[in-house]
Image (cartoon, rainbow, N blue to C red; front, side, top):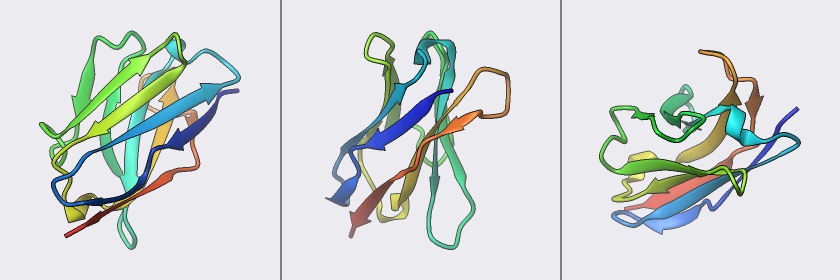
Length: 118
């Protein structure tokens, strides 16, 4: 079992930055691809991006490409989501998730709220 805990959310003005963390316990996160997702009120969950287990490969959704960066520190069992040039439409609950397989995510965090004011 892997337990994931997100932190770093909060209120920020448009154009600002936040860095979210996804800390794992229970097992080493280095065996897992870790993804970030978000869900705004009344909307479906949206894929933000993911990072490979080694950290040498990342992939981002179109809405965040060029503004968000995912990185990881396997020694700290933590994955980060750096969010720059934030927009009000980035307001959502952000979740991290881990998968050992190719598609389905096995473990999810509880989420952290990000609110971007205009």
